Length: 366
Image 1 (cartoon, rainbow, N blue to C red):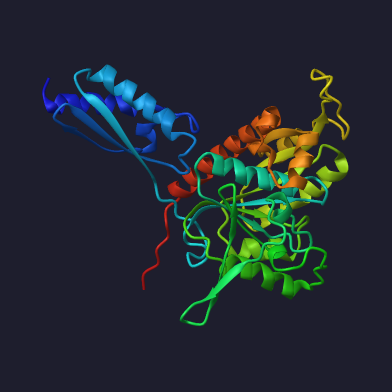
Image 2: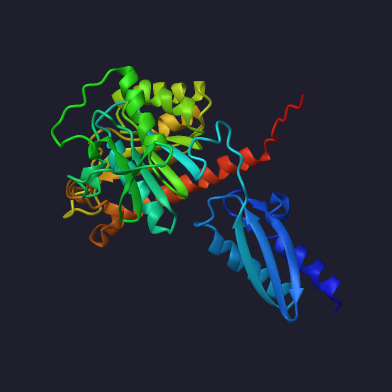
């Protein structure tokens, strides 16, 4: 078999490998950058839609198997890199962050900050570089949930006079919060312009470095912080946390409407406090706040339901003691639910990035 014939077979076989997040082949996605044969090695270069941490190993295995079946005499080696995604909005804002995700809720008390902390920790567990911006100015909880109470934001003055803060880091997550500036029991008494100013400081004057994900833990509702965020930051999309009962769902509907009006994609709904299972009755589920509300509002608005999170004592203890439950091996079942939700969220991020990559850039020349 000639080298040209080997290349043709390799292109054909690898091109039929499917990306499971999209249900399309690598040929359809234009993901094969090149294939080179060097002696008895087939070097396969792929460009996949980011983030790739959750999918790269699976596609690597599938490509190597397809290559070996097509040309058994060659040893396949797969090299995977991420495609560049062109975000809309200002490139001067967080230019080194690949995916910006807002975690929002229509009302308080639904466990939004707990979900945000666990998503950030689950992303870091997979090897992604992650930041968490605690934008809940009135109720900053990240210092508690990451066991960093009493920590301060370290800052340095640059030669041009600007002050740049360094986020604190725990469990592989970089964290910035107004809680690192205020004393623990100090009240945040702020009007609208001051809120926006504090938020802008956390966005613009923190040295986040290179990040795969920056997770924004937003305050509840649809106020100044949400509007400032959507106007200033080129978000990949938003996740909305709710509980099953109708009083929470009505606020979710308003949040969805707000994000859509400012052209932010809804990546999905997470239903928190879905049910309670007593440890001594592991087969029982008690739907304390009703049942199925998250799915109802997701179906109404044609957005994904990323998952349902039960109430557990371990989740509450983890939040109070500063250990996200996804990191606690003694709470494997609850942690696995949240890790699966995070994996589904990443799948939706990839789909949003694929859509952004397929949209042509508009260039205006004069």
